[in-house]
Figure 1 (cartoon, protein in one colour):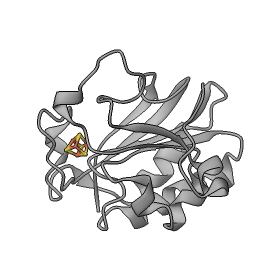
Figure 2 (cartoon, rainbow, N blue to C red; figure 1 turned 90 degrees about the vertical axis):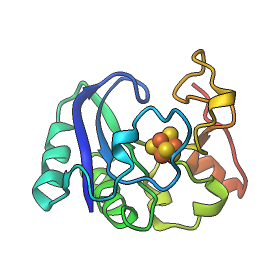
Figure 3 (cartoon, rainbow, N blue to C red; figure 1 turned 180 degrees about the vertical axis):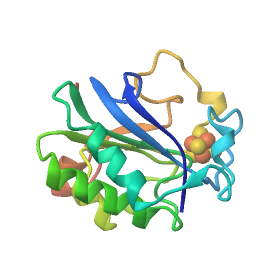
Length: 163
Ligand code: SF4
């Protein structure tokens, strides 16, 4: 699998200062996607064990509040194993830091995936340009949802994340 980029101090994707990784490859091709260079599954750079360790090491500082996983599509079949391994290792090493993940899929279709056990927040749904609203926090269009994963799994239905 491949990745597009890593940000060592990201203040736009989730609360606080975070480390973020953008996985490479997305099948959705949403109109006016903010990141079309991540669509090609053969683009970007190879995601290796060293890359994973680099991401984990970047999060060691106390000002880093968590990890944000974006794309591309991290929950695509080609990316989900790598995303799972990263999320699992991150939570083992930093149990008090949060993991946020952005997907074009819906929570209902992915809730049984193992990775959900390690996520705090899932921002789900494809970007829909006709529902674009720049005032929205952490999402681009109003159809998308900022979901509290732990509460949603407990309840068995979507519970939205509250600041
Ligand atoms: S799901 Fe995200 S990365 Fe994929 S095309 Fe839509 S906006 Fe772009």
